[in-house]
Length: 311
Image (cartoon, rainbow, N blue to C red; front, side, top):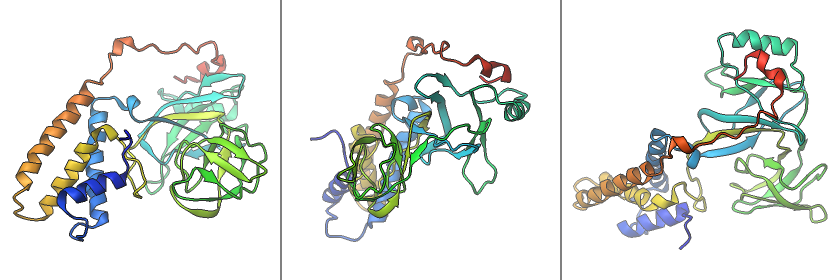
């Protein structure tokens, strides 16, 4: 059996255990809510143990546009946890530091007025509680990393985009994004004659003539993502190694809805055993902090960043 588990696998398992195949006592939306509770529990244990890097580290490009300063953070970022922002134009590689020190606002203004060579700094901004947090570059972008924005047809569960309208400057390995495309997706291959692009991840929705954005990885945001909550039956769940805990948690939640069900106590005991197993397994994954070695990239660093007080 595959180590990956889909939402279809989990929900079918639960329905069989509770003999709910032909019942409407538990709606699909309720089942999904119960599944989310179990996934959030696993997520909370991982954050409590500070082992996010083993589960949730991911990367996405910042789609630079010349003259622009503020950009949206990835939609699936967890608590605005940026791990690194790295610049790489093929010849130079360096960190883009977050401005944190006491005089960071003065430093930011100075960088805007007197751009420091080829370097950048950044701060997080939240201009309105109804808006999402943004990352602001200092100085404004001096370059554009968005290469092309073609349209194409996508099918949920398929990695192929068909009837692609434009292949200008497209290269294998570039990031591709859109409303129906998961974060962090890259171009695996393409055929200009066949008007198709094959992606590294499958589309999450079906769409016709959807505009997609193809971006080179000039500025990459490495960050901690949040748990992915399934929305369709083909979605693969996070924590496949704990699928039995997730299923058992859903079973208990379903039984709680039916007051006085004699199975509840037994199934609740099973859940507590599995919950303990999850916590113990994850605790054993906590790394020895003494064996971590930070890669020395100082020979790539543009020395002009330092005098602005970046970290």
